[in-house]
Amino acid sequence: MLPKVIIYNAVSLDGRITGFNADSELYYELASKLGVDAVLMGSETVLTGFEAQPFQAFQEIGEDFKPREVDPADERPLLVVPDSRGQVRIWRRVLEMPYIRDVLVLCSRSTPQEYLDFLDENCVKYMIIGYQKVDLGFALEELNTQFGVKSVRVDSGGILNGVLLRENLVDEVHVFIHPELVGGTSPSSIYQAPDLESDEDTIPVFLTGLEKLKNDVVLLKYRIFK
Image (cartoon, rainbow, N blue to C red; front, top):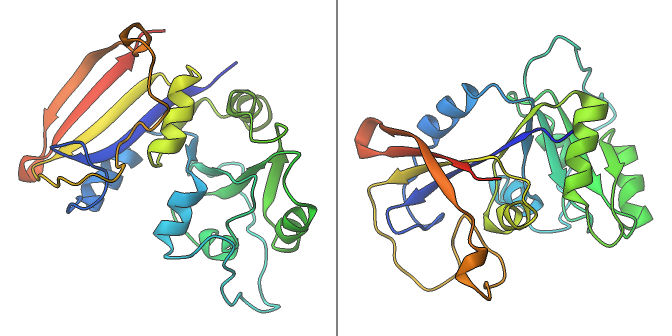
């Protein structure tokens, strides 16, 4: 059974996801109220958040490092990151984040053994699921079965969102619209995927919530027709 999946993004008035002054405090304050069991975050988003480059390993903690002990009663979400290429090498820093209970990396059979060894050495849990790339549909099912995940917040950029949307794995989309115009021509959207051949392939949604927040930020909530 698939968990409920919510895409959760902040954008400018013209739909950009970068280049504007996002209210991160408001964003995460309301995110915490969703009460999800897991947060799905793309590897590029993790790297950007920690100002790291792909495959870059920071100076890690010494021998005093201990793996995080997970309390079964801990209600903080599990952080799930697809990274079949092995780009993220800063997991000990990620594990220090206070608002997650643990980390699970999604790998595939094409993931280098060297990276799997790296995860083992740094006490990072991982799951091999898929061949050339991570099978997100199967991964979501396994999150439900193995970890009891019933709801997921997708906190990521347009590429991961695009894969989830095209594979019909998303139930809701929540968008914070900020009162700023950015412009530009570089790709910057909450939904990045190959162009459609027909407008009949668009994804219909219906509005379930509209709320004006502080500083003229507007929160829109949509449910996707299945």
